[in-house]
Picture 1 (tube, rainbow, N blue to C red):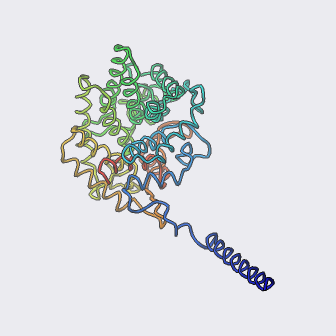
Picture 2 (picture 1 turned 90 degrees about the vertical axis):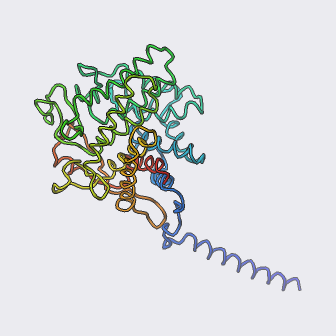
Picture 3 (picture 1 turned 120 degrees about the horizontal axis):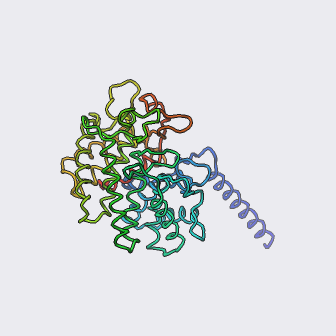
Amino acid sequence: MNAMKLIVWVVLIGFLAVTACRDKKKTEDPLISSADIEIVPKDLKWSERMMRSEMERFPDPSLLDFRTKPKWSYTPGLVLSACSKVFEITNHQAYYDYIYAYADNMIDSTGGIKTYKLSNQNLDMIKSGDVLLFLYPKTKEKRFLKAMETLDQQMKSQPTTSDGGYWHKKIYPYQMWLDGLYMAEPFHTRYARDYIEDSLEKQKIYDDVVLQFDLIQKHSRDEQTGLLYHGWDESKEQRWANKETGNSQHFWSRGMGWYGMAMVDVLDFLPENHPGRERIILYLNQYAEAITKVQDQSGLWWQVLDLGNREGNYLEATGSSMFTYTFAKGVRKGYLSKDYLEVAKKAYNAIINTLISVDDNGLVNLNQCCAVAGLGGDPYRDGSFEYYIGESIRANDPKGTGPFILASLELDR
C-alpha cells in the first residue's frame, strides 16, 4: 500500500512539473508579441498616454532625445516640465520618480551639473533648471539649489548684443534666436521671484527678461506678416543673415513655437505690476493673429510657416503642438480672446487625427517631427528653405512630445 502511494505521488508530481513547464513556456514563448500586452492603457487621457509612452521609450530620463549617454540639455527639461504638470494633476508617484531620477543622475553631491560648462554660455542649458525649480521645494536638497545658483550665474555673465540681447551661445556671437527666449526666460523669471531676496537685483532680472522680448520684437518681427524670423545677427556677418537687417531668411515653425511658449510661460512669474507685462501680452496678441493667418485648413502648421504651397514643405508636429499649447493657455489665462480656443481645438484635433498613431500595445507616437534645425555651425546651416525642409524628420521627438503633453493638459484631453 505504501509502495502504491509512493507511485501515485511520483506520477502526480511529474504531471504538475510538466504542466508548470508548459505554462512557463507559454508565457516566455518568443512568438508571443509584446504588442499583446497593453503597456499604455488606452482609457487614459492623451496627456498621460504620451507621458507614459515617453517613460517606456526612455526608462532613463537622462537619455531623452534618443541619446546614448546622459547629457544636461533642454530636451529633458522640456519633457520633464510637462511631466511635473501631469504629476500635479494625477499625484502618481511614478511621474515624480521619473523627474527625480534625472536630477539625481545629473546633479552631483556638491551641486555640480554633469556635462555642463558655464563657460559655454549656452542658453539651451538653462531650460533643465525648471526640473530643479520643481524639485527643490519638495526635497530641500542643497545640491539642487546650488545647481540653480550656477544657472543664475550664467545668466548674469551671458554676453549680450550692444542693446542688451542675450547671445544664444558663446559660439554664436551677436546672435539672438527665438529659441533662446523659451530656454532661459521662464526659468530666470521664476528663479528671481522665488530665490532672489534683494529687491533691486530681482527688479533688474525682471527688466532684463522683458528686454529680451522687446528686442526680439524690434529686430526679428516682420511688419508685413507679423511673423518673426528665426535668428538675428547684429554683426550681419553670418552667411544666413540679411546684410541690411541681420535677419535669417525664413519663418520657422518651431522657432515661432518656442517664442509663443516663452511668452505664456514667463507671464506666470512676472509680477502683475511690472510695466513690461502688458507689452508681452500685446506681443502675444500680435503673434496669435499672425500665426492664425498661416494655419493650414487642416488645422496644422507648415515647417516653413508662410510657404505652405511650396514643394517639399510639410505639416510639422512640434510647431503645431507648441502653437496649440500657446493658444490654449493664452485663452485660459485671459491673455487672448476666447476665439483662439477654437484655433487650438482645431489644431489639436488635427494632431490627433493625422499625426498621432497608437501601437497595438498602447504606445503613443507623434509623427512628422523636425528632428533639429539651427543656423550656422559646422556643417554650416544657411537658413534656406531647402535647409529647413531637408533636416531629418522623425517620430517622438521630445520637442514635440513635451508640447503635446502640455497642450493636452490645457485642453483637458
